[in-house]
Each structure stands twice: as structure tokens, then as C-alpha cells.
Image (cartoon, rainbow, N blue to C red; front, side):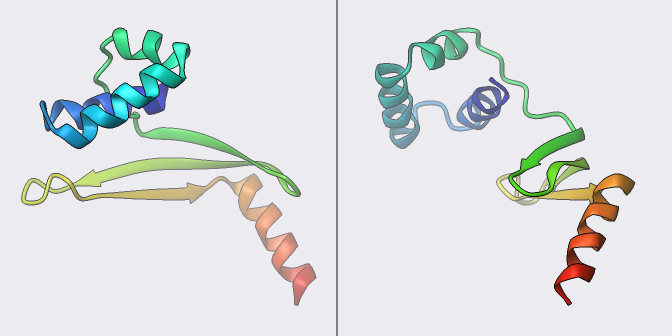
Amino acid sequence: MREVAQFRADYARYPGDASFQTVIEDLQQASPQFRLWWEQQDVRGLPDGPRAMHHPTLGVLEFDHVTFQTSITPDLRVKVYAASPATVAKLEQVLSASS
């Protein structure tokens, strides 16, 4: 659902853009769940904060996430992920085992 909210926030910046409209129509036809989420009209982007990712070998990897956006080029965003101490330990263990 968060991805739909981010997509809607991006779409709101370009109302009437034909390429967005094509993707929206395709997704609405393919997914009843997308239709439901799209109708909620949530235009918030993903908030900064903690993120967890599941790696098939390492398990859960945790990061803090922050997004930077410039006023000069609002389409440009830089996302920075900083690994939690537990994730750093997992990654260091894997890297040391491979050398």
C-alpha cells in the first residue's frame, strides 16, 4: 500500500500525464487490490525512518532511511540507508568469511 501512496504522490505532481494514466488503467484492470488502494487517495510518500528487508541467506536486515530532495530538481531524490548495528555485524561476518 505504501508503494501505491508514493505512486499517487508522484502522479499528483503530473496530473493528466498520459503515461501515468496508462499505467494506472492497466493496474486497475489487473488488480482489485490496487483499485481499492488507489481510491483511498492517499498522497503521502514513504516517510523516512526504519526499514527492514528480508535477505534469503542473512535473514532480516534493518536500516534507517532518509530521503533528500532538491528544490531545483524536484524529480531528483537521493535515498540513504544506514545499516543497524545488527545488520552491520551480519554483513561484516559474511564479508570476512568470503575473504
